[in-house]
Length: 502
Image: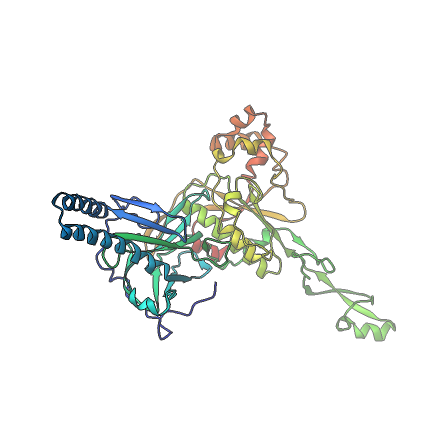
């Protein structure tokens, strides 16, 4: 879809005031979640160009009245009564055909951002213009008194349901000549995926007898019927004070991997050694060369770089949605911190991204996306907590996508929700209740050496170990499915403002 210019910049691109909506010509049903629906009317979807015919009671009353007038004309044998019945039928036919021609002569396009940060709003811009399919005869059918409704929804936590974002009230367009632009500002958006499913325009001009509605699917490609907006989690700056608790690695020069980094040598001069091929001439110790008569270079103490991987466990019992949002924002902030330090952490998800449980959430990941921060942002904008009851029997039979990561080479960090509640004061909102998180290092033997206390704790919190054992699963299998729930706590996060000091 071509990008549209901003409203108000072109000569023929006025931006009308959406607050002047005018009276609603039809009574709307507020219980409907899709585009505007009409109560006490027969709606017939035709399946052609998204057209629908809406016939209210006045249309059927007109047909019934013309029939009785026709019978009266037959009884009294009066041609004027026949003419009156024919006039009523002609009005009904014209009132049904003209709105159809008006809608078929209109085309729509949209302009909206593809990426937005959490707690920010955006604007959906819709452009309507005429095609002039009838050529010079188009002036005989003016496009007036149109009703415009935009269908913007947010994908639910299960990936299948949708929640309406924009209010369902339509916008009244008094006259459409060449083209007009309409701005629909959205409220502050939460993290997730939003879809612009389409735009519906309807009219009953000029006689107000029959309504026609047309749904225009605005899309970027011919095969796509939805235009999506991805709302990313916010990234907060982190100091990295927890890094001294992690294990470090030495220089990985010569290893081609996305986690490779040439570690800097310290300024601590340890000794001299013989020159080897590849040594920098800047490190040659010339006084020793003059004294010994051979090439000697300085040898420094090798510094290590603390590196880490990251695990987001969606099966943990998050107490509130705010606690889970804090975990997602912390995870993406940790990824940015590692990237700024010169190494990109591996991001692991439990259950894995390829599992059936996350398939409804991850099926629309962008194709050919570069691995790294952009991919992690797309993943973390879609994740949602997974309850124990969400695992179906089909998933029990297919365990090919098991959580697998190594804690031997690098430390793996995870975020563990706590059951505590802390009161914080926010200048803009007042006192708010926060549920803290703990940043912990996963122990090496979490998946094969379960302890009795940890096992009982997992059973009491999640209450699904017994059901798994009844289906032939051992305690070790349940624990591995559950993921790590304990570890060495290296930081505590009570709310977003704590991330700057972590």
